[in-house]
Every structure is written in structure tokens, then in C-alpha cells.
Image (cartoon, rainbow, N blue to C red; front, side, top):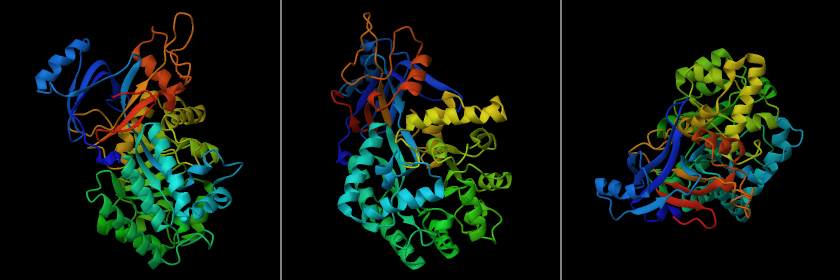
Length: 467
């Protein structure tokens, strides 16, 4: 069990990269980061000129007997990615969406798959795979949607804890609109089941150090007004975070108007139910009105931008620059399986591309830079899930949630350093560090993720990696 591994005092020596601010990456070519037995960063040193300098560093902090992990040539350390919106139960459908838009996609692909996870053997197979796959892509924290099933949702929490992935695990509440074979029988049943899942997580991780429950109304059309209000009460009573969807698709927005005619807007539906707070994650937010943006900002709710999903289901292009400029906290989400990839690095690329498509009509100010997209995938995501004091960058006192990136190299004869695995990034040796990071962002994948740590524990490693 990864979460039970004993942590050794360790010094990581070599290049590291993390977001200093929204616009600026901090790139340190010669660094040393000390991680203590609690998995926290104890010190960060710069200008470690060569391997020999690691001895003075350990002496400075009294760490002479610590474990040393050296970063290989063309490699660097980067904070773990934070996926602020992913449906673990939909993972087998990744890449399958046909010509669907949101509402028919739910009925044709999603509800049948999710309902089948009442079979615990199938759920175990799916959930083990999605956690392993996301870890392999450097995702150290994930906000997961499960299904309506209590045993299967609890199983997902167990698997996340056992594998050591930091996770928010939500049992989906839905007592309306969905097929009769896949919905909560009543408001009372929905709330009872949600409480059971919360208590299960309390039992396996009392301090929510690795796994936390999260209240999860699927989206407004899936819940009656009473059901939403009861979840709002639970949200206030427990202080447990909440996640849902908002303004993803124009037909969905029209449906919300029909179902909740007394509400001023989609955002007002949640606000009236007590579900729009500083601990709320709103996925998509593609078509928010200016009044809704102001309300989201006032309530300090957070937004998960899911660029791949919004493109795949032709939902629209979120105006992320506007959201950021208005002071709304934004992170990135894969939205598997509306999104076609479990890779947050892919979402970084897609966020840049979507912003450039927006810029073609709205002007260049709408563009997101590579640096900004990386921020959204790390520090921005940490703020969205309420963990910005713990993770998102390499700051003294924060947890060691990190990934080691290894890039390929091209020999004099043109051969690659990794012909076996086929490293997707070629480094020629003359690139500046900014260029190497850019090559990883635009060409890299899980083959470049050599190792991943959560709270100081090694939770994933490529074959041949030795810490």
C-alpha cells in the first residue's frame, strides 16, 4: 500500500521547474530539494554547481545520511498535476463519443456504463486502471465522480488510498431525468447513501490527508429542487467540498430554465440551494452570463476548465481569459470520458489551443500562454480543490507531490536515446531550458513521466527507474 510506505529523508538533486506566478515559470537548472520523513519540503537550494555540491547542502541542514535522488540528463522535476474534474466511472469510454452532444451522449454512452459498475468486480477493474493510468501521467490529485452506488464509490476511495493518489471521491446524486434503472430512488435515499460514503472515507482516512469525500450533485437537471437543497444543507453542516457541472451546453442551459423557472439563472439554481460557495467546483462554465460570473466571483466558487471535452462534445469554447481577469479561480480538468484523454499534459495543450481559437474571434488578448496553462494545471488546480497551502509548487512546508520528467536526446548519428520506448521528445543539446519545457508541453506524454510522488511516497515509476 503506497499510502503506508515509510518515507525516507531524501534530497532531490538536479533541475526543477514550477510556476512562480500565473505568467512566470521558475526554472532552476541546478537545484536541490530536501523532503523530510513526513513528505514535506524542508528546504530548496539553488545554484548547486555540480554533484559534489550536494554534500555541503546535506551538511548545511544536518542531512548527511539522507537518500539522494539525482535527476538524469535532460530531466527535471515538476509539481504533480491536479485534475479538477474527472469521471472515474467513465474511463472505459475514453475516446468514445461519436457525433454526440452532451445530453444524447449521457443517454447513449454514459448512463449505461456507469450503471454497470454496480458489479463490484467490474468496478474494481475500472477503478484500479483509471487510478494507475492517471498516476502514470503525473496526476497526483484528482477530483473524481463515481456513480450512485455506495459500495463501488467506497471501493474507489479504497483504491485511491491504497495506491497513494490524493483524491476527492464523490458519490453522484441524481434523483431525476436519468433513466429509471440508474437514479436515486428518493431524496432520502440519495442523502442516506451520500452520508454512508462520507462516513466510509472518515473511517479509512479520518483526517482526509489523502482521500476526501466530496458532495456531488451530478448537475441541476439530474436533481430535484429538494434534492439540491438537502445537499446544500449537508455541504454547510459538514464543510465537505462540493462538485457539479454548470453551463456546459446551450441545450442543457435551456433545460435548466424549463426545470427551474423560479431561478434567475443556472448559477442561481445552485446558489439558492446553498451549493455555490468557496468550496464548490463548477465544471465547464462555457456559457456563463456576466451576471453569473459576478455571482460565482462573489461566492468565491471555483471553475474547472475542460477544454478537450468541450471540443469533443462541441459544447463551446470557454472564455478562460475573461474568467481569470474577473478574479475567478480556474483549474483544468480532463473530464474523462467527455474528454478523450486522462492526461493533464494534454489538457495543458488543449487549453492553449482553445484559447487561440477564441482569440481568432475575440482578439489576441484571449490567448493563454504555455506558462499560464501550466499554472492552471498545478497551482490553479490546487486553489480549485482547496489544497493550495499543501500542493501545487515547490515551496518549503508544502507536501512533496511531484513528477520526474525525463526527455530524450539525439545522438550524433541521429539515433534516439530511447529507441525501445520511443521517447516522443527529441532534445538536441542546444536548446535553452525554456525550450526544453516547451518541447515537453507540446510533444510529451506519459513516456516522459519517469516517477511520481505523493506526499513524499513513490506512487508510480517507469520500468528501469531507480530512486
